[in-house]
Image: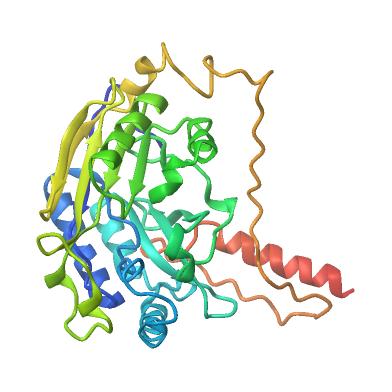
Length: 356
């Protein structure tokens, strides 16, 4: 359900570092910040890119051949602490969202459930019922990130209803992909979340541009990390280059659809939580003059085709499966994905048809 017209909802952008490469400790920290923001009246709480268990900040600092041993060790630690959604690692965060009746948007390093050796840069949207409403994997890791993350697919390019408005998210430099942005605009996004490792004046200007272009609220969720936040035993730590001790200054912002005005932030070289009261109804009025996927578009001239098919690397056929077990759901905890029961039943039926 989206917000009623004319009703403002408080949103929060968390700019705090993770407990780097420690999944469980970082999830506990995220739960603490959800509780803090909820006490301040926030109904939508957003975290930075790969907050759990942290951005691979050695990217761009360590070089392939020269630091191969460091890189292998670091990747192994990141993989061991990456989030496995099928194992419900996010359960404490989901339960916190349900307990406080808030929507949470959080970046994660997601572990592949097939080979078990691949990581995706993912953002999840957790609804106030505690269920995961959407999972989006970053389409194109940037530059050296390609040595850490695999490219995602289009299955998560979705806008979902939330009490704070129609909600969508793109990660970091995906926000420089015009067609990806347009995909969200065409689904009527009202609150656009951009978890990121990018920072600086150019990034803030980009957030303002997107708010003006899409006539939507924009939450730029920056990653403020100081060298003191990096574990002393991190391989290659001495090679990390900083400015005044900061690996990333954050620069989180909240931007209005009215002329791209910054209403909170930028929060620079500091830790904290930004708050703003956002009314999704403002979006409708702002689109009177500019609706890039509506009256200001030309579908007779331009067309866009988005492939939302998932890309599983293997499909097993010709086997008669054991009796499918679909446990009853507990409304207090819910399942990992909202359509898990349906998916399980569909897979079982497909396997049955192919085996006869």
